[in-house]
Image 1: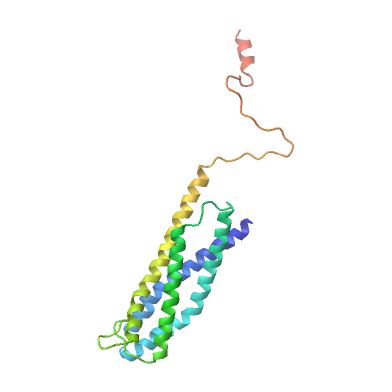
Image 2: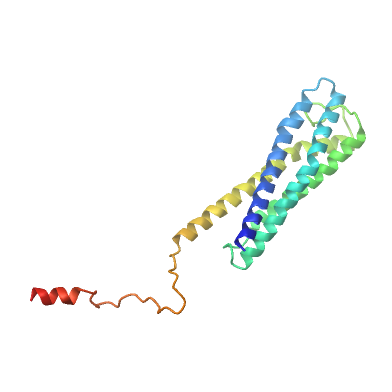
Amino acid sequence: MSERRTVARILHDVGLAAWFGGSLMGAVGVNGAAADVDDPRERARVANAGWARWTPINLLAIVAHLAGAARIARADKRGLVGGPASPLKTVLTAGALGATAYARLLGEELMRAGDVSISFGIRPPETTRGKLATARRHLATLQWAIPGLTGAILAISAFARESQRGVNQAQPTSVTQAPGAAPIRPPASGTARPGTARQRTRRR
């Protein structure tokens, strides 16, 4: 059981770290590099190529994170980990999933549009109109919303883990007894410790 919980923690943490790090790198690196391309019509192709390569890895990271989170949640309900799952963490995860899926749909729409003019990364130039301009504006917001949401999940997970560690350290350590041994009982108040009566007899 302990090994399964360890695997669940690994899936949860590694998947979430890849989800957060990949989205942040995409916003800073991929879209930032695309903005430096001289030809505005080539910028969309560069950005789309980068995100298309990352999408399968990102999907695996999300699946790993959700699988680990589900396993941890079941252990929490049975009292094996300690503490119920955070409702705020659940809401943030749902928001990050929705934002990631919506961003992917918008990215596919841009890819189908072909070589379109893009200025300042994925933000549309002033001359752009219609659904394509709306998609670019939404992507400009989502590129920062996704790492923001996943980063908040990371922070909540770290805080919950440290809080649970403090609770475990505060709990008294139980003494393990051999099978069939008599129970260990604390001495009653007023009972003399062994050797005390002998010392008093010698003094007299």
